[in-house]
Image (tube, rainbow, N blue to C red):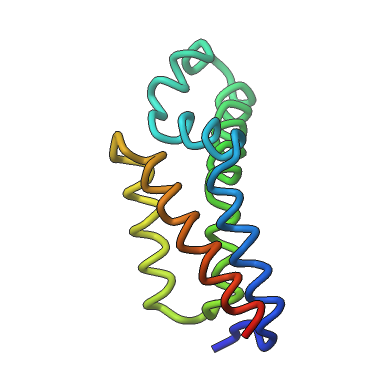
Length: 123
């Protein structure tokens, strides 16, 4: 299913993803992604023309990538074509974004990912 063939590579990806869940960059990006309307308002709202809304959307998109890139990298460990893991990660990302406890959810996942990553790395 296109998953990582090496336990060390898979473990390293899990460890990096787990540690990233605790970083200030993850928290900052998550705070911007949790409230897109507040993000748009804090940046002056939509302006006239074609280019300003595109720039605003790209800027918000970069925050969303910053929030979720490590979780998406997990698919290379778990299987890029595995629909079950795709759905599980998507639900996790959704819960991080829509619940007020999103940072706590990210940290709990970070602990789990790091522990499983260390186990897999040394397996």
